[in-house]
Length: 87
Image (tube, rainbow, N blue to C red; front, side, top):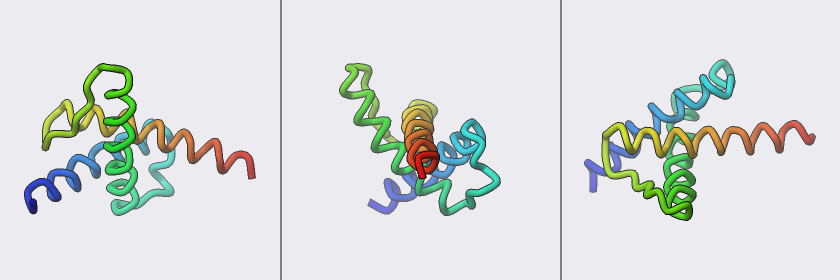
């Protein structure tokens, strides 16, 4: 249990940080926000890629998990930017 929680935090942090750079929100985000965005991205990316039949499980600290979480985090940040732009 503890190892999987640590894996989610590490993968989420890496994916959230990379997504914040791509989406140009890095200057407004701290480390904790990167982790939260990455973990939400892991769930979102896993769900969407599974629906597309591509797979998409976050299975630990590996490149595949980081890519899945990164894709989801970019989508999540794009949705947030779209919502904030409408205000």
